[in-house]
Length: 111
Image 1: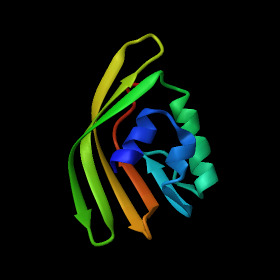
Image 2: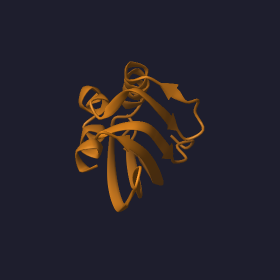
Image 3: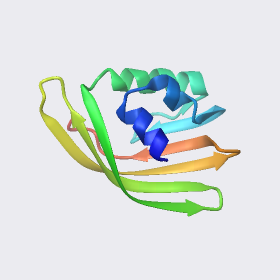
């Protein structure tokens, strides 16, 4: 998980996408579900381009028989250098070391 969050914080779409299964599903908050690695990468890249920077602090991680749950805070830096820090919880369903389902629970409406 550390390498995944590092790729996100680096806004590195290519490395991020490498953690996903080819036919993964992805949902960010209440946005529609996105399917397939290439489509997810495009959506995530658009999001990366909407903020100047982001930084995750993972407080806890739980492993389950089918995946991982992480919770913590994320700080977004806007292009005017103002910041927003919010809590998040991510659920990952993993198969053969690749993420098949990626669910983000966070309220980014203040961005």
